[in-house]
Image 1: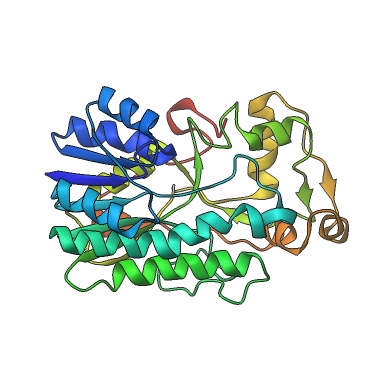
Image 2: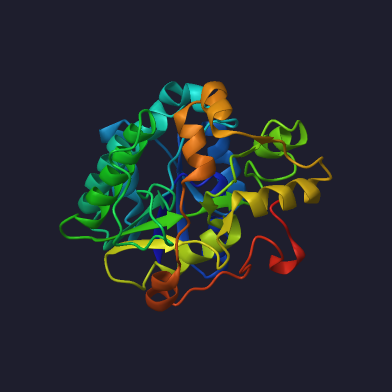
Amino acid sequence: MRIFVAGATGVIGRALVPLLLEAGHDVVGMTRSSERAAELRDRGVEPAVADAFDVAAVERAVTAARPEVVIHQLTDIPKAIDPRRMETQFALNDRLRHDGTANLLRAAKAAGARRMISQSIAFAYAPGDRLRREEDPLFLDAPQPWRRSVEAVAALEDQTVGAEGLDGIALRYGYFYGPGTSYATDGSTAAMVRKRAFPVVGRGTAVYSFIHVEDAASATVAALDRGTPGVYNVVDDDPAPVSEWLPEYAAALGAKPPRRVPRFAARIAAGRFAVYLMTQLQGATNEKAKRELGWAPSRPSWRHGSGETLG
């Protein structure tokens, strides 16, 4: 199968491309960097150099590839996230979800592709009192600047799933851990935890759903020819509150236990969104992905999957 991967050198792309090649697929990887194009070529991938915001260049790259499936893994996530600076830090990422998705969809249709798979997130749901399912609403009335990012997620999903002439699938990945992620031992979250700059806020009641990057990649492979158009949560089997996972993560890193701070202090120091992330965020269930994609994570829990931890 001919497959076009936009974002082939990103965190997911680096895990996904080897799986596609091992399965015997012909892979074309899009990057805007000539240096990364050489890296792709060395890995057995046909490179395509194009800026995701250049409509004509993207269409030329995709139509030249003649793919059956287009995979959208384009992101621009800062290495270290500052809740106080999210408006500027995530501006380009939000634009990629709006405009980058539109450009890829247009190109996929022009190339005669049959399916498009887009990267979404499983932590943009509105708050609730149970694990979030795909039919639950997104947090479209979230406080700014998170609202803008949730609106961008909704735009990506609406464009992908609603595309005429294409089977559109949006995979709502949980928080990534594993090589190249912020939770890796050399990542930005690990650095914050070691400095005790990532505290448990209030009672740490927010629930996180994690997914190892290799399991996210395997779910993407499963979606090549399985699943009806729609959205799918791609998370592990073990959603956990901050009060559980953060101390365990700190211990795995050999760091001191995280500090505990009251909600009002966290709001003053880091803002309303940071308090939401630590006290109200709800995890997601992967039942639909298991049932319809025939997929299950090889690491069912961030705690003990294959002897690994988040670090």
